Image 1 (cartoon, helix red, strand yellow):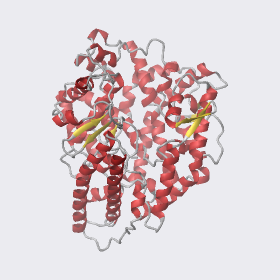
Image 2 (spheres, one colour):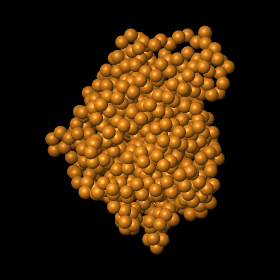
Image 3 (spheres, rainbow, N blue to C red):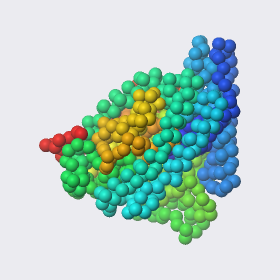
Amino acid sequence: MTRPAWSGQPVGNQTIQGKLIMKNPVSRLALAAALALGVAVQPAQAQTTAQADAFVAAAEKESYDYTVEASRVFWINATFITEDSDALAAQIGAKGTEMAVRFALEAAKYEKLPGLSFDTKRKLDMLRSGIVLPAPTTPGAAAELNEIATRLQSSYGKGKGTLDGKPINGSDIEAEMGALNHTPDEYKEMWVSWHDQVGKPMKADYARLVEIANQGAKELGFADTGAMWRSGYDMPPDQFAALTEKLWQEVKPLYDALHCYTRTKLNAKYGDAVQAKTGPIRADLLGNMWAQEWGNIYDLVKPAGAGDLGYDIGDLLKAKGFVQTTDATPDAERGKWEKEMFKFGEGFFSSLGFAPLPETFWTRTQFIKPRDREVVCHASAWDVDNKDDLRIKMCTKVNSDDFVTIHHELGHNYYQRAYNKQPALYLNGANDGFHEAIGDAIALSITPQYLVEIGLLDPAKVPSADKDIGLLLRQAMDKVAFLPFGLLIDRWRWGVFDGSIKPADYNKAWTDMRLKYQGIVPPVERPADAFDAGAKYHIPGNTPYTRYFLARILQFQFYEAACKIAGWKGPLHRCSFYGNKEVGQKFNAMLEMGASKPWPDALEAYTGSREMSGKALIGYFKPLKAWLDKQNKGKVCGW
């Protein structure tokens, strides 16, 4: 399923560029089913620039009208789940899918037409490359692709591993992998059973899916599906691949230091027989099924005394009288204090000079889980009418995590409103890493100084500098540890799509890449016919993943730019730009561009630089890097 709006988690999205990417939660391979309509690509020689302009104008009007209607249906489905609302969502999703396919095939006719204006060319490229899995027009191909992808997603959703020999489902096994009360053999059992039972059966289907999708990508004018995915970044696909490698090389020394330190701690915990002092880390010991974020094992690696923040935002809120809604809360009081948490978030943006949220935000947002119906609790930000009908869907709790999430989700809402005057196809982030990076940059700004300024934290209780290493290490265990994983998912798929990784070598290439980038190895030798990549949702779900790598880089670049504009002089991780109107003006200059210009233009409008760079991330974690280097002195780092 695709995300219905902007949310804070890595979940899939698809369809055409612009609003439909945010709003259309249809089954991914309904796209392929729609292609069974048999629309053929026509030769381009009869086309004119006037026809191209007219097509784009018509497509924008149709897509704009569609997204308003679809957003209302999807909102109702997400906040009032019934068989009827499911059926209506499927129906409107299928309509959007058909439209996206029709637009892509029509746009392909004009691909090589000379004399197109900048905007028409840009919008045609968006329409042409907006389908994640294109099927060719060969009779029967779309139906087969649909069947395969449906099977893959269903197989993943029903997947189970084992713990103590007993079946355990995906969400539960993920939670158990993050618990610290298991033995190495139990982690190994969960890891191996999940990869064998979920990933391995998918291999033949996945190879066939790749074959069909590549045929579809070629019909749309791309070398292969991976090249089509890489084409959405305002540069040739190969140049974009080189950019991601450059970014990785900038941040790799920090990751290597974190890897070395973490390996030492795991060796101290488990001994040489389980985790050696040198070489790669055993993948199942890092607190996550995919070793993509390591925060769950922070308690194993934290420095003594340095990791205690000295306060908890949830406790600070409760000390101010905030009371979490329960089933026993009287109707008149339900959601009262959770809504007040959103007032803090609004106040952050207001302090930068942004207009207040519309009154309808406060009457239409889902602040808490209703008592009388099923809803999707996963937090997401919506702009229902493409103008000012901003909403958030969330089941808020009075705690620290949700206080941060509120600021993150509101970042999406203010971004959506900033670009609401753009044409339909430009109602989106500058590239697919921008939206999440905006939300994450805002979340980074919830520093002790900010909490003091909004009256939640007593100035006398601001953590001293000796707490910084623990705080930075906790963040790095998620944000830094994720970087190579965020890169390699699509690196592997690009090789699969371009044929350099053959089906017979799928698992060897996957394991080799995990070793090369993450420095990890499976807990047991893997057979050649395994398909470990399939054990990660985004592979059978066909969700492009590089956006999450970019977002992890960009969020620090955005945050550093704000701190520089604000004249912050202290350590970057302590910066607060609350109340700085100049930051707000520069920030808005980038946000209001939406997707109307190449992303370097948007980046320059805010940061002064046209280059994505990992240097801000390195600067943020500079004190931690120096500390890690001291801890690692005398150790044999690397793998």
